[in-house]
Image (tube, rainbow, N blue to C red; front, side):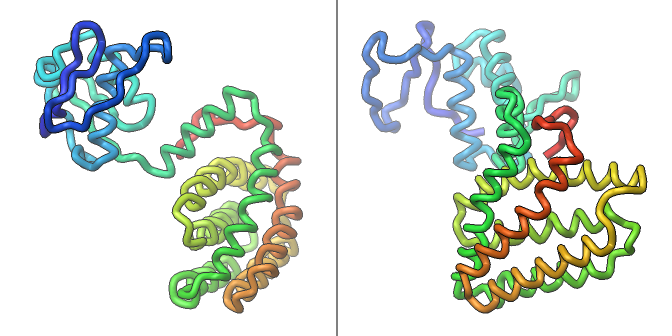
Length: 280
């Protein structure tokens, strides 16, 4: 790993090298001072985000980094725990252990967001309401893309065909394809911020949709073939509106579609967001 160009002073301050840009001093009492572990985590995190530490690479041995940062072993281990909790590294213990780097991903964002929402006891219908507002806007963006006929519409058509071919009793299989359709609209909206933010929300919502579909399959209840046909028909209408470049109609159709299907999931799930055992 390239040197990080700094060390942590005994007082906790970050000492930059001459090649680094100067940082305006912080007045005493202006903000809570970060701990040594937080400063180390900040420096390593910056390297991961910048790509200097590539996804899948291993951090150097702890002894090397402790010496480079000039910090105690407990402080360095706490820094690793911070990064591990953020999903930026995974630590393997033992003789062949080490810390593997994981670049930030929308999946990591979804997991972190889900834990925050769960910790705040956010209702599941609150998440559904957020998607009901934002996902139609993504569909409108899709309809405005000049390259939609090449980049998006063929994928949506292919998903509709695949879903129609799923066996009637395979509710979980159909649910997966339905999820792929909604994710394709988010991914195809052309706005990177929406893709990440709405994608994280959709990933959380999909956990509950999949659980609902699996439960329905286990007990032999849930969506009936006529409901699946109506969902496919709605998806085809949405695809038509996007292909025709009708942003207002695409927005209206997705809004109406979500208003129909979201209550079904809410009626079959616990009222609160539950990330227990979830894997984004």
